[in-house]
Amino acid sequence: MVKRKVTSRSAAQSAVKKKWHGNKVATRSSAREAVKAKARTTLAKTPAKTRTRPKQRIAVSHHREEDFKADGLRAYAQYRDLGIAAATHGLAQAHVIRLLPPCNPAEVSKLHYHDVEFQMVYVLKGWVKTYMEGQGETLMEAGSAWTQPPKIKHMILDYSDDVELLEIILPAEFKTVELKA
Image (spheres, rainbow, N blue to C red):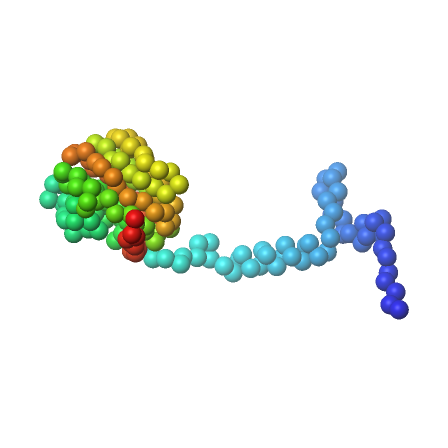
């Protein structure tokens, strides 16, 4: 049988190192002091900011009609890249989307999801009617914004002839998966 030494609270307290600061007594165990000393040494050796990504650049984009291109994800939309993907080395993407009139539900109303970490849409002008899994149909007008959680199933149902959207997505490169309704 192994005997264990039982130490009372008062005995443990007497093993604590005491430091005097003016009239105040600060008590710290030797183990705690050792841990803090090691942390200070480690922090002193570690750079203040350890970068895992390249340094981001400033991106400035001014409105120009010729910047709207039909080279994006959807054939019924024009995209104006805001230069965020290049400035962030692929961390994020931002663009203004114009959905081309007239809305053709047979073309636009396809259930899909995006394999992204974050997606946010803000209606700059006009309106868009969407469907999102768990949310149902929602009419979004100028000034409305929404986020779409990763891989949420959604689709556009209808939109005005003048709709423009600001979309921000992380990461810049992602996969879109179309589903059968």
